[in-house]
Image (cartoon, rainbow, N blue to C red):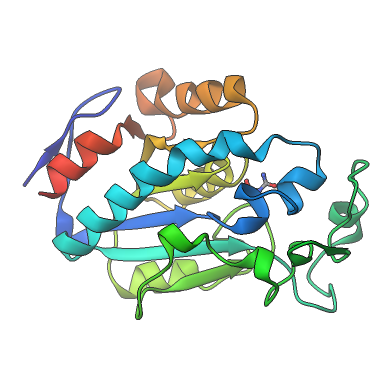
Length: 220
Ligand code: C5J
């Protein structure tokens, strides 16, 4: 069994029961004119996570791992977007309003797509989620149970929001989680660092943190 160089400790990984989960690498978060920018963020800060995620995808596909992509977004009628989420803050464009990439954070709009460099391959599950966590109101739990998955290798954006929420949900469901540091990113670099530190603190209270090079080496 390969042993992953990770913090706070090396982690043996059974590849037959491991999955790569790529969180919300969508145009709405990574490109100008989407949800992320509407909240006042510099979206260029997320670009650094794209090449390491590409490398992870290639390694996971070559190793035969289950690869799951997630997308945050809402139904066109906003029936799954609670007012508390829609009305929060003072964005330049609210969820559902028309922007340069279509309606903000709405399924089926160009902004909701995963960025071209990380496009899912045919057969790879894409989980549409209305919340920050990938387990809430989705079929992810059932999908992972069906495949007897025990270890989640998690990357994506943003580190402290959707990656963290998903990892916290996964912990309570009994999954071993590895967060890939350079394949995650945040609009707020200090939150990225703090988010990773929180995962691996206290003996790995939420899991392990590893670099993409270490993960791709283990997958080889
Ligand atoms: C945010 C996400 N940041 N995917 N969503 O609102 O992290």
